[in-house]
Length: 52
Image (cartoon, rainbow, N blue to C red):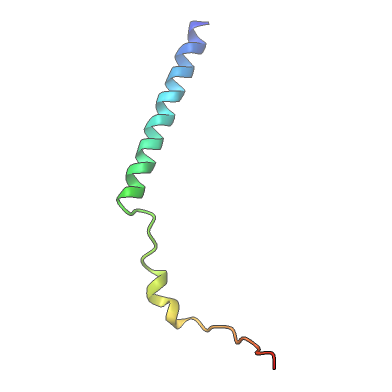
């Protein structure tokens, strides 16, 4: 039974470490998209039909 408690506490500790690493990487801008806004003007826009 003590092995279950050990593995449970270890898995919670690992999950907390990964969660903290995720929060730190989001705050540092790791997942910001800096490429798409610069090339967005190069993409063709679809023509919108106007109803008259």
